[in-house]
Image (cartoon, rainbow, N blue to C red; front, side, top):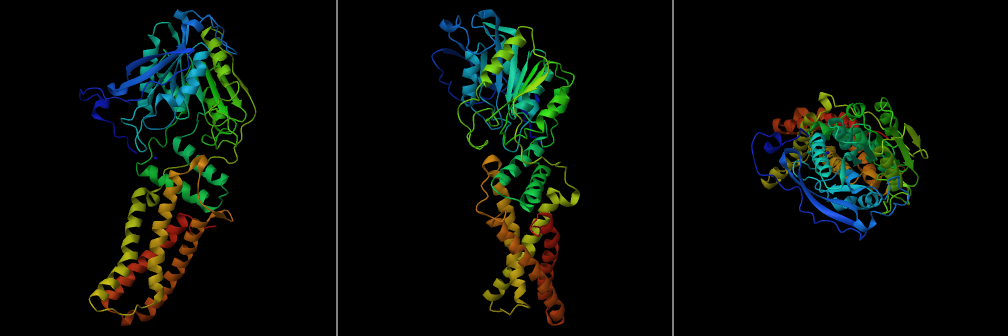
Length: 486
């Protein structure tokens, strides 16, 4: 997706045994590299496990092709880098093995580790906590034999593009920062853009992407089900004095690749050693993509690992490159939009109250009819439109929420809205048509109730009154969610 539920151990209020971050097996590595397993404490004493990859001893005298680090780098002076994962619970270190192998072949000691699952989930996370985990990894790498502690930096992918700068802003032990697919916007704004962009890529236009998807995320965040929705990545960036290398693929569908780089440039304006580079035909993770960012191939973008290797070589040799930007312009078909906290009437609490009211109003009518039939006291309805209002309203409300949540869970670059007609998924078109029918049925029921209320019993007046209340509230609710808009 909040209100992070930090554990007592993480708060340091109670001494408890450290909890394992993951039981992931050490990754298999190519024969030209060697792997050393390490344990280190994360935030709150969480036991973290990782692997350090370096060139095998027989390869240390050979130059690294295309790299700025000399293959003859003395064992005592080897640079190091800690790789920080993107989003995901308990992501295994093997997820970053391709990058780790390529960086190690270019003369670096590379630490990859299993991401925490404790305190991190779809609805709970803390970038501050993840930054402290990364600092624990940096400390572990700095004391390894053959690693120069003054030449250890940090690399962050995607979500790690928030975490790595935050860690670097807290510690001068970090010599440099590399971010890939980093986002300069708040998480909620980035996520709403990513899902909307995925829907637009699938051919969807109109109220579903312009209103419904955006409002659902605002409601989710207001209900505490989206962690760190308004986190501001700019303050940590403004305090970074270490050299920074920022990399984006031109076909990034998860981070707005046109909007984030200028934010980084402004935030790092006082940093004279900021380098930005864009790789063509590359996706969010700077891997090759054959279809505009939808499919990620295992191969890194040509020149990506060489750029990191040469840049780290210059930085750790005391020659950090001065600020520059290079590479082709990225592709971003739509801009992000501000995602402000909802007003009281559109808050999660208000939406929950409306949902309960709709359930009561629209289900009470058929339930009472069923009870009467079972008791043998069935009577004809005041109008057939009342039945349509009850059924249409109930299906519209529940159906729209179910479909929107489905889109959120399957959204992003692989959005699957189903068959699309005239820019609208058929499911959404059906829900919109049903919403119109519900409004018409509400109007007809109101007219019938006005004509016949004098002849209705008290119980029937109450039943129809409750149903009409639901119908009256359904109109502004359906407008808010875009069901009654093009």
